[in-house]
Amino acid sequence: MKVKYLTCGGLTEQTNIDSVLKLAEKYPLAEFAVGISTKINEPNDPRFEWLMKLVERVRQEGLRINLSIRLSMEATCIFIKDYFSPQMRQLFSCGNKNAEPIFGRVKLDDIIIKAEQIRLLRQILKNNPAHRFILPCTEKNQIVLSTLYDESHVMFDVIDQYAVKGDELEAEKNRPTWEDILQGLGGDISAENVKDVLAEAKKQYPFDEIYLEAEKGLQDENKNFSVEKAELFLEQATEWISQNPM
Image (cartoon, rainbow, N blue to C red; front, side, top):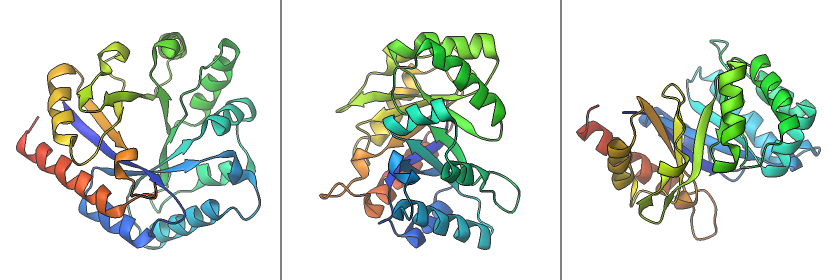
């Protein structure tokens, strides 16, 4: 079992871009996720302006950094129904000097995907092969995931957003049945328990690759993204990975 990404979620327009770029350079497995809500459709949204500044830095410096966006519940519903807003189209079209998407992965929120939405979602996945979509892996969405995988032949990643509760890894119940689907584990993951989570995942999971997503465990007392906590999380996870070759 290899770890493909160590995802740090919760970046906002208050996050210092220089600090993020330094972490990305120091920890190649790090992925940084920015939440997108329906607010981004409003003019002069500060988060969108911050995203464009980040994009410019990546382009100007020729960086290769793992970046992703996470759509809120409302934004996910609108995205599936209406596909793209002008600003979402702009985010999707952002590429680096190697013509690769700057925001390589797109995470949809934990919504119940209705039967009539499967056709729309399938089309989105097919029309955007350069992007990897992350779909919520829940008991209620298993039929949707199976339909997309078995009948549509489209590829995607999945995440169990509630895999880790406290210090317990509870992902067994939502485990997908496909070995070639990248499985993500989310929940109560932080620097304090990431080594234990990785150790348990190695025991439980038969997959070649997984990724971890931490967000709440990286917040400061004001519930803002903490660069210091993110670095400690990445440091602890990287140390465990280096000591446990796979």
